[in-house]
Length: 113
Length: 112
Image 1 (cartoon, helix red, strand yellow):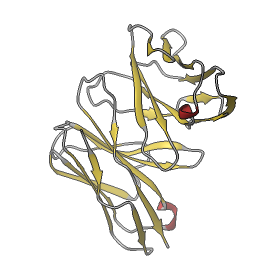
Image 2 (spheres, each protein chain N blue to C red; image 1 turned 180 degrees about the vertical axis):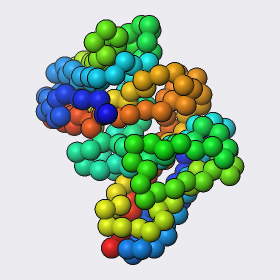
Image 3 (cartoon, chains in turn green, orange; image 1 turned 135 degrees about the horizontal axis):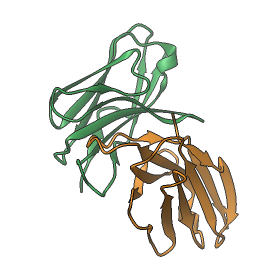
Image 4 (cartoon, rainbow over the protein chains, first blue to last red; image 1 turned 120 degrees about the vertical axis):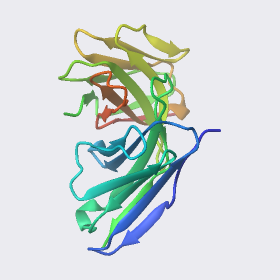
């Protein structure tokens, strides 16, 4: 069974901390994405990557950065966590040209206090 | 800009039908549909491509009106297991990165 694994299900961090969210997929997918999900706002794209070391900004990249050193791993970095970054973070991957859609990880619920 | 989904929420009795709409202000290349149950990750239902056919199987199907940049998801004879929040995700061009912009979701509640 194909998988997207996010390292933490729940995370509590302090304001100003540097936070790393890890995502690993075992499907050899080229494209990987980080979304945040907030009530009433749906899923909003933070960053995505279509190849190793390649990254592009999504709709809400401010306060975030990403790293993709290996094809299977896509990391989201909160440079200096703030309370307005408290959210559910979802990682997803998809094979280029597929008819099968995104595979999502189970999400990381981040609380910044 | 996010696609607009309607309705925002709907409550149905088991066995009734539902239609969820997704509308974009931009020309679309593809539309994805996902269902998310409470506390779980979204799960892919189907994809509709520009120029493609209506998709679906048995009781869940979808259509894509390219002229109106709209897609509709049809749930027939709904079951309790259909409860959840449905999201459409739209792709505006075939750049090959499969970047989706999601709507804000439609919460579907099925009651016995």
